[in-house]
Amino acid sequence: MKIAIGSDHAGYEHKTKIINYLENKKHQVLDVGTNSLDSVDYPDFAHSVSEEVLLGADFGILICGSGNGIAMAANKTKGIRAAVCWNKEITLLSRQHNDANIISLPARFLSLAQCQILVDYFLNESFEGGRHKKRINKI
Figure (cartoon, helix red, strand yellow):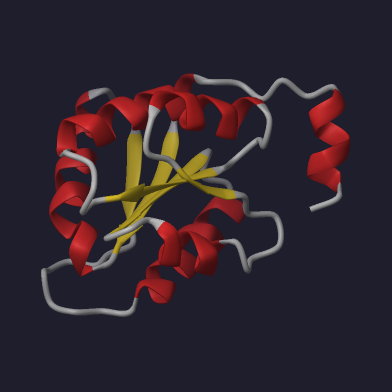
């Protein structure tokens, strides 16, 4: 699976470890940055991950302090459905009902282990379609 990933400074440490985690699972990972703990603007990385998803990456992963700002920025891109995920149920529903193509994680509120588990749920869950498809088409 091809996965684009990006973060701001608050998500940098989780991002680097999630990349290793995914590569060990044989996923192709495209890191769009940031590449340090220096303060940066999260919309830059949200837009880059969104672009990669539209160009053909299977999914995107975004990480910032709360998960909110970076998701809001990504969701400005037509065709992107970025979901802020913080537990199993929300993560599964983001795929099942909302056909989310980007998971947004709150690094300041979840451990690395929690993030890795949620990423696995996200990548392995399917969209149910059906009644949800018409709703997705209205977005």
